[in-house]
Amino acid sequence: EESYFRESRRDLDSSAGTCLVRFFLVVFFFRLLFLVGYGFRWGERIDDEKGPSENSGRGSRCRRSWVVCSVSNIDSALVSKAGKADLKWDELGFAYVNTKCFVKCVYKDGKWGEMTIETDPYVKVHIGATALHYGQSCFEGMKAFTGKDGKVRLFRVDENAKRLQTSTERMVMPEVPTNMFIEACKLSVRENIEYAPPYGFGGSLYVRPLMFGSGARVGLQPADEYTFVVLVTPVGDYYKGGLSPVTAFVQTKYDRAAPQGIGNVKVGANYAADILPFQICKSKGYPINLYLHPKTGKTVEEFGTSNFIALKGNSYVTPDSPSVLPSITNKTLMHLAAEMGMQVERRPVTVEEIVDFDEVAACGTAVVITPVTRLVHNDEVIKLGNYDDQVGPRFSELYQTVRAIQNAEVEDRYGWTFDVME
Image (cartoon, rainbow, N blue to C red; front, side, top):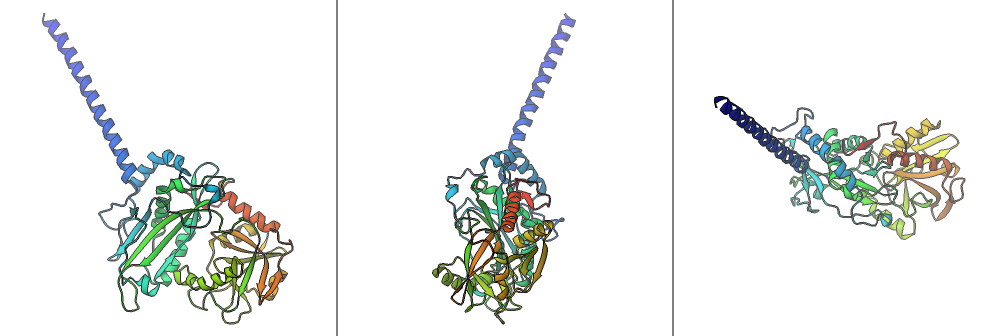
């Protein structure tokens, strides 16, 4: 009888132990689900209550552990959402399309605050903000592409970070650290991943980081507060027809930038100077204008929103001017041209020698390359290049090479693309 009770008690203890194990397994399972869901929903936020990050040294930023946790769990889910927005991808132009949200971060009291996701497309700004009164603002422009493998990548975002830092220095604004800049761009793309045009349609997700003085000032001086935002919008070709030749109009009555001015930084005032001349240019039927040196009028500066590039013999030529905005696309093309065996020349380009080039084009983020086969100068239409209003073979090759890297159709041997999920 005593043996019977011992056996019964062992069975009972064993059963209780099994139930207890099962209970803890169930609790662990639901706890895990909660953590994954929490990471999915909030992992992208910056909730660093300890202040500046030890890594960046310049302010709080995304908690790396949370970002990694959230990204690793939603990677496949997010990638599958790319291009799922209800849009006609083959009809996209280069115009603003409202998306789900944007990323925002405010600099105040000498440090960057937390990064937040904003769904209201309107930004509340103080009436005395320096951006409104004195134009204390700067911006960047880049693209994210859905590759052949389905992954979405930013192109040369690190170079955009460096250029923004040059602009902020010139405008007496706080620096946006490179790692913060890249993470903000990736986050904005991920949060709007469904608006990234699918591979094969020729479109991209245009990424526009913008920083402006949001602190109130009446006298001319830097603000004490700055707002950094990153918005995205799906775009197609900047010029209808994509890689098609255009006619450029030479501006002789207006200057884009003054010598030793702000032509070499990407600030709002730099582009504001081109609004009226560009409207005049378009009213005459020309999609692009060309600016000359503001003092002499004898050498080429750049097109309204793009760098001037040309080919002659085995030389890749682009103007060397302190008033020209350094184009990341031009930097990319110069690197590839050198690999193709061309001699890269950065030098003054006279107006007279434009007619002697084999191929002439404008280059920039929005277009990569736009061939220019005719030039209107002082009411005279001048034929350019050797290819009778067609795209020249070497600019075509350079264009196709860049696009193949952006679309992950070939291996990126240069480290130019950044997977937004990493």
